[in-house]
Image (tube, rainbow, N blue to C red; front, side, top):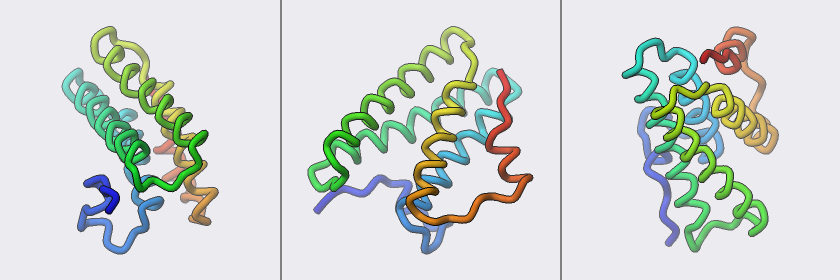
Length: 132
C-alpha cells in the first residue's frame, strides 16, 4: 500500500483530489511567501514550502508512485533544489521570487492536468504577487 502524504488527509479540504490538494498546498505556500512581512513570518513561510516539497519528494520516491520515472526524477531534483533554496533564503535573505515562480509553475502544470478552472483575477493576483 503506497503511503499518502499527510496533507492529502487534511479534513478541511473535503473531497478534493490529490492533485487539487497539491494545487491548494502550492497556492497556500505562495500566499505565505508573498505576505510574509516579518523575519519570523518569512522563515515560517519558507519552512512550510520546504515541508511541502519534502512531502512531495517522499511521495515521488515511494514504491507505489505511478508517474513516469523521468518525470519523477525531474520533480525530485526540483524538490531538492526548492528545499535547498529555501534553506539558503532563510540564512542569507535571498529573494523568495524563485520559489514562488517554481510553485506557480507546479500549480499551472497540475491545473492543466485536472481541468480546474482558472482562478478569479483577485486569486490570480495574490498567487503571482512577488515580494523580496
